[in-house]
Image (cartoon, rainbow, N blue to C red; front, side, top):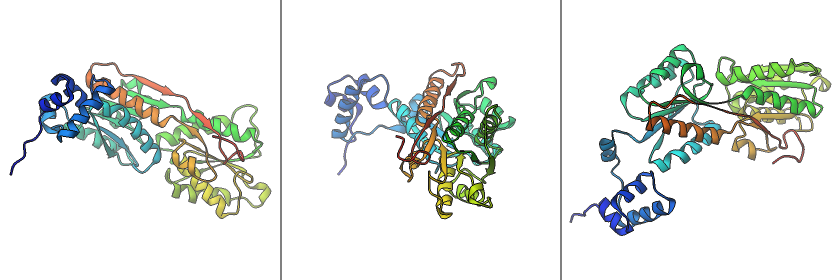
Amino acid sequence: MTSTRATLQQVAERAGVSLASTSRALHGSGASKAMVERVRAAAAELGYSVDAIGRSLRMGKTFQIAFAVADIGNPVYVEMMRGIHEVLAPHGYRVVVMTTGDTAASTADLVRSLSGGFVDGMILIPLRTDDELIEEIRRAPVPMVVIGRALSEHGISSVSVDSGAGIAEAVRHVHALGRRRIGFLNGPLDTTPGASRQRGFDAVVGAEGFSAERVQVEIADDFTVAAGFEAGRRLLAGSSSPSDRLDAVVAANDLLAIGVLRAARELGLATPQDLAVTGMDDTELGQVYLPRLTSVSLGSAERGRTAARLVLELADDPDTPAQQVAFEPELIVRESTVDGGGR
């Protein structure tokens, strides 16, 4: 017994709309929400599925956009991916998640591989950059958008945020609370986020009028909870007496901050009474961890949505001029610095 596959024409007839409207609704372009729901309901009733391969061959597109990051387990990238999907899905695009590796050379190799034609564009978050990587991005055969570093001088579309300013805001916050023995826990300084956040910390503690009895910097091996725990223990155990112990730690991201909170608990320190802790990225993990983490939001989801819109514009018109969009950091105060406070 054989079954006949439903056709697009049959879906159009069931939905009571034109063939062109049915195609637009199924492919996510130029159709109202009500039209999309109506057509998709008809398609589901008939068991119709879009012929993705045939569609790609007809239109010369894969309808796939790569999202390339160094660590697919980092919750900030998960939040970005949600924002990217939110923008791309209505236009019929899928998000393909890829890993860049942790070097500029491995990232350049990944960008170079795009000549294989398996995606229509890429949203890239390079952990490290060099001249070779920038040149590969410039020569890429598909639209490229970089999240992280502003690359206007290279003619590359980018979505950036001043994370150094965010670190400075976090330092000013704990300083305003009366904390005067302040530690900064950063990740590797040869990375884009590590370098930017170190500049922000150095600038604020070196500013005229800033007073602190003690300032200490510790560099973790990575931007992970485990690395934050090990570096946090070094940072907190380095004092000879309770009166000399740090009373605040500003961490370069939420994962490092959570590692510090674990280290503090191991050493018998109460947060925020003995130790105020801040993070950066305002991840869901930091929002549910106890105590809830004061963190600097860098607008992860909105940066993802913005990058997706930019890559769609470039996919529709490769001659679109490069655009640079910058976001401002925002400090979100919670219980890890102010007992009983925050949102």
